[in-house]
Amino acid sequence: MSLWKFFLKIFAISMMTFGGGYTIVPLIREEFAHKEKLIRDDEMLELIALSQTAPGPIAVSTALLTGYKLKGRRGAIVGIVAAILPPLIIISILYYFYTWFAANFWVRAALRGMSGAISAIMIVAVYDLAKASLKEHKVFSAIILIAAFLTSTFTSINTGLIILALALVGIVAFRYVPKEKKP
Image (cartoon, rainbow, N blue to C red; front, top):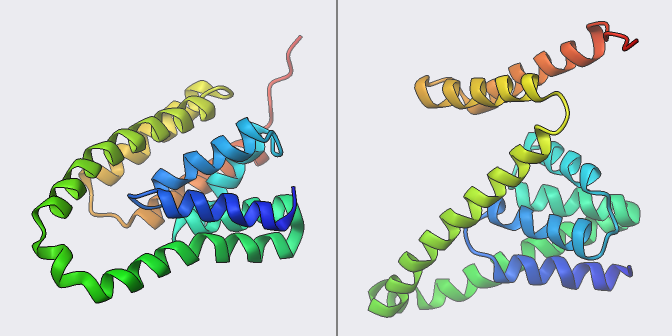
């Protein structure tokens, strides 16, 4: 895949997706892991997991890492530009027409309608990611998922700290705890 084609795919995904990174990420996965088959699905899931740990918007991090995986440093730069440019263009346009958009009944109705669709897309994305992560080490993954959910829901602990703590648990569990040998 050429850099230009990569740019156009990320640009189109970013331009046509509303709701932030968690709605864009499944589309990037679908495009490059399932349709184009340029990245194995397990590798794409690892890129997505790594994207979640990086500071900044997850859509930009995922585009950066996908570009890097496909085309090296130039692909990473192209991924960043392609992911950032559409929101920048849209925000610039909205700046000039904000008063009209804010007062327009049809625009407000369309945005309310999109929020329901965005919620559905996010639920599907979470389901797909959870299903993929539960393939191997089912019990451990389920415990980590439940612990993260309960901790973030019922405490005021910063989400970044929860992710860091659970990442350390995973590192210790898979790097330093001896594995059982199967007979």
